[in-house]
View 1 (spheres, rainbow, N blue to C red):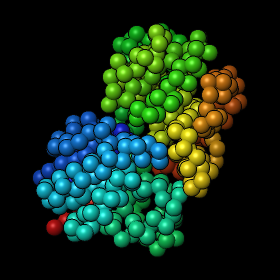
View 2: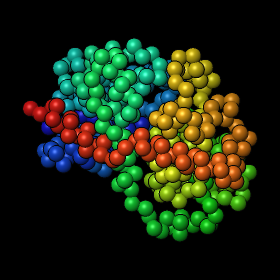
View 3: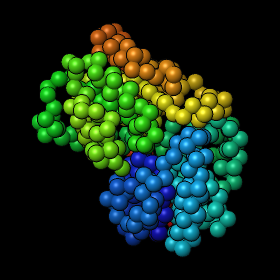
View 4: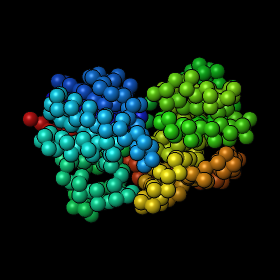
Length: 369
């Protein structure tokens, strides 16, 4: 079959690549065309547009980049119409992908949505629209099944694909030596994959690094940038920026400071105590606080429904507050052990690997000609 996938950010690229890998096992004749990234491209097929050209996050940021977003939408719709896929697979990225779903539904293309839009966080009535334009919805968070059922929608719970990615990870035994790390305990800095995240968060993270000279800080570089992009932020600091090595960094880390997003869950799955941070345009944050209905922003806390990791948002996110929390993680053993014990509860909720294979099997089953 001919598959068209749309992923608009780094996490979608990861999950899309793993899904493509499993689809190829079930459908040896599979052909892929997609919006995605380097990981999907490594699985073959044709990359139409890289997610680095598409990822805008926040109400204000979307507004000022609206012309680019609309241009990307039009190009994607045109490419789908020209390619005429047998199956459309939309991966997260709801602001963009729900519009693509509506377009595809009118053209009678089967719409498969992998990783549910987070409609439970705000404007829950969007579920009614999803029911109209999505044929099959694959959820990765356990509480989503009951949420959709309350709205009269049956969905498939497939487990979380991050478990697949972590299970498939093979540590580099030479990681420390290869990167000339100095033998000190490592603190991972994960400032996100978008320019705006890095711009808002990395300066504070680096100021925190100055407070802890006895530790080795390491930045997980976003795959869509190179080391030159990070140099102005470093301002002469000898802090390594490593690319395509996030899991090796986490595998060797003693603690982490992490931008809110998929990486918070990855950090927890590697059993690394962490601080979750987030900053954005004040207008976007202000609007978000008015409409969002959830108690937490990190996936770790959302899944367990408890504040097991500290979240520092906007005005609360400063070098001083991050440093104070990091000091607790590093030097208060009871505090550290409590967080690690709570990670065990998260593991129980998450279940076992297999989301990518299960989703691929369902997509092939539902769309078999």
